[in-house]
Length: 117
Length: 117
DNA sequence: CCGCATCCCGGATGATACTG
DNA sequence: CAGTATCATCCGGGATGCGG
Image (cartoon, rainbow over all chains, first blue to last red):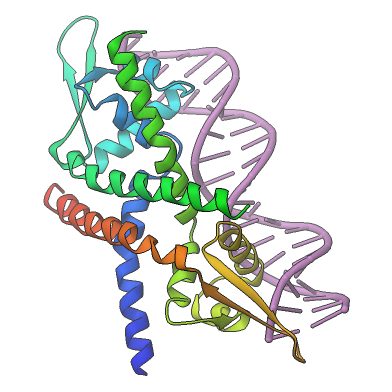
């Protein structure tokens, strides 16, 4: 194995967690849903109304993804009619820095594109 | 407009640059290509060999995307046979922080998933 | 009210062959 | 060598309807 190959394979190892992170945030709806839950727990219908354009099917699926990834906690209240609420977990709060980092670069990038076109 | 609506719409404005950033990095190949170019300019064929599994078609398309986004510079050398090289731009260097941020969270996230399963 | 099942479309990606 | 052309495939996501 050449020295450059070693460096190169280390870069690929770095890429795995980066991909993990991107996968969690990817898709059209994950971020908007997280935003909708930023200010406290909400019911399915409330989220559906706040995240404009999303269908029940997608919301259901995305909430499950987020729950599996430990970003959202789902609570079934034993009332009638049944009430289900969703809220962010402490783990999801750690996303703040990532989002801020992406936001800053996104703005920088937009400036850069404007200048060169 | 309610106060919460104002807060909410500001969150949506924050989301736009975040989406911009994610779009630039998204897809299976962007990061690996950037990594391949980290240590200097390379020819099309060299990149194709380093980024394992990518087809010519995808490499061509992804390089064009990256060029349009100002992350990669393409140079045609007037030799025979024609030689084309690609290199990272200064702007692409600003991605470093973003990638590092994603990497850190990706690792944290993996730990978190392991514990809760 | 809260979701799941089914059907379907379009764009993203892959495989392969071909050209200047 | 550096791509393009063409066809096949996969998958996210929309529309709609049903069920507890």
